[in-house]
Length: 362
Ligand SMILES: [Zn+2]
Image (cartoon, rainbow, N blue to C red; front, top):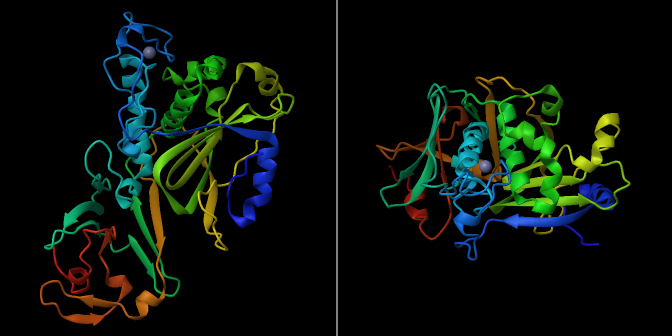
């Protein structure tokens, strides 16, 4: 049995999960243009079941949306009409993610996105210091957006998200899952495809839109997906479990309505097992992660939802912290509640530490 690294406190859950499921595939978007693609005039769209020339294949449909990072992972089995239809859900997903992509410097098609909360009470955008060092400046205009706890070292940034429809976020995630499934498995998901491919949100299907999520203390440099499949077909568990790893977040759910599991769905007597976070390195003694179930079953537009992102610094940093007036360069004691702007830097070869410590302005 292949072993997966996880947090020490999750080893038993991992053992339990792996007693029911085995890894079927891992998907990471390729870093260069794929070769050996199916010619456009021979393509078949798995989502609408139409082939060229009844539908066109001019677009480059991404398997993992580029809003999660620029990538070369495109498919040969999604027509332009389906691509445009499913693409609409990506806006909801981006709005659901809120500040996250800016916070982690995720470059999509273009640069790292600017984030503005709907009433512009919080704005995050890339800025360049005089030395050329780039940073993500997050400005809070409400005086309530930042909670800096100097005792624990934890800072929480709170903001309002743009309106989005939760069920569309789920459809966006489910679309990724259905895209990475091999066709031999995909063909058994005709029923859920019906729910995916139109705007009717029958409550029977909507009920499955619950996603198990982890917020971990480790980041994935690029997004990755996993499909795990049931080991034993007599077990009363759903056939496939899908996971998306993005930055420090994990989204996990079972793909509903596998045709051969009809009996499970009629009796609704099935058990779900969740895979604890799969880590690439041993976590040591650290056990910092949070888990929750995200309910994406709402079919109405969700407005003014609060979002938050927290990060941890060594509390020791705050004992020596000072405030520097950017104009006069005058230094004064650090008052957390006075902070209206936080700038994040990626500590790489372009980072000018000296300029930063001298309070260089923008
Ligand atoms: Zn299609």
